[in-house]
Amino acid sequence: MPGQLLLPFMILELGGYGLICGFLAKADIPVIFKLLIGQIGGRVIRAAAVLIAVFLFNNTMSPNTVLSAAVIGLPGIMLQWALVPLIIRGAKGLNQYPN
Image (tube, rainbow, N blue to C red; front, side, top):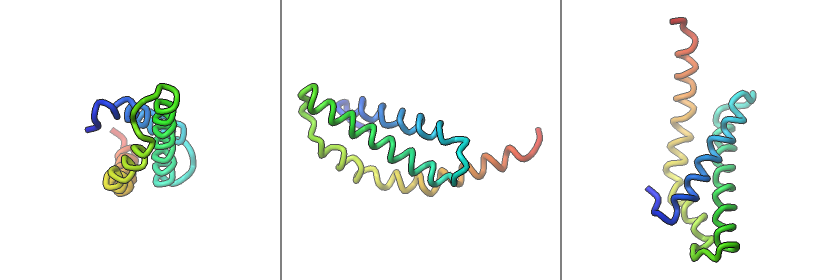
């Protein structure tokens, strides 16, 4: 769980994931590329939010927080690379059979 200081930035990042992946839902590209684009876009949104907070609002958070969060989050990102395509494939398989 993120600390209280990071929570607003995490909310923006997760919202970015959902927004970007939602726009890509009907795109004719492999799921892993949709996932990568969504993850990169979410991280860019988070980085922009941190930079805005640091420079406009004189926040004490260091911009290096974005880099350290990315490094700490690597195991979760890799787990998503492995599981999300499998979950999508399984969900598509469920839709092939009529109720």
